Amino acid sequence: MGRRSWRLAAVLLLAAMAAVSGCGRKEEGAAGPQVSVERRGEGGEGGAVKLHDEGGESQVEVWEFDPQLEPLDIPLYPGAALVPGSALVSRTARGDKVLLSHQAEYLTPDHVQAVTLWYREKMGIPLEGGDQEATWVKAEEDKVVKTVMVEEGEGGTRIRVMELRGDLDLRLGG
Image 1 (cartoon, rainbow, N blue to C red):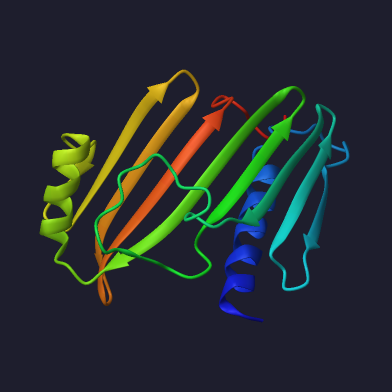
Image 2: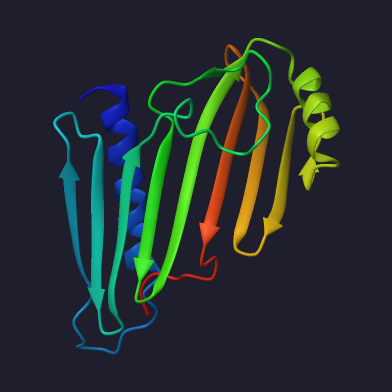
């Protein structure tokens, strides 16, 4: 299994675990939620987790996207390189609520302090952070949240960007 397939499998597994753990309490003797995992694409490039419980059905779909074709409206540090297989979209739905998430990870050989300073100029004071890492969270408009996480990593500075769009209060299960 390639690196992309492992990453996607991990995302689907985490989604399934979140779905099951978020179900709330069940009464003794009550049946637990039914969870199914479906992989799509020839190389495992997509998949879905479905959860059916007494509250209805939830579904989390995950697939890859190309940030060059679908750029996020988040500042990207100049010269940062996309980490292969890290650009993922997830669509979570329950009833009439839908939440879309686009996320990607980038790597630059530049020092973490230079990257953090650049993002401070673009996004302001981080929500939290220090010399070796920082996190920005911005609510852009109704139902849109953008995050940037910068941290020192092996081989340089890692930059993780994410955009959440839709029903931010969506909960799986229960």
